[in-house]
Length: 92
Image (cartoon, rainbow, N blue to C red):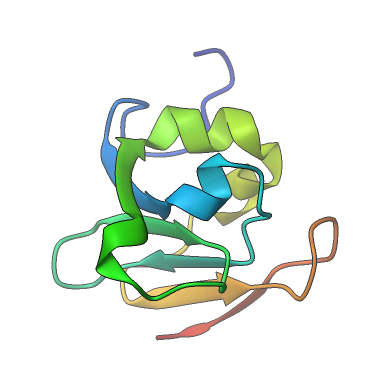
């Protein structure tokens, strides 16, 4: 993938939700400190049955603003109140 901003490869497993895959905006991103996993969430569900494993590249293609978070340290999160608004970073 050209101009890939992440240190992790595009096929790195990440977590999202069924709702995001069906079109809900990504409003919360976490970079977990225990395993380095990326999570791309919409804030509409915490139900485990809604969780989906997808490639990091698939999420980046869905929302290229995620590239702004490529340097998000493990143990941090970034959120925004709506798609198109700036990301706000904080320790998790």
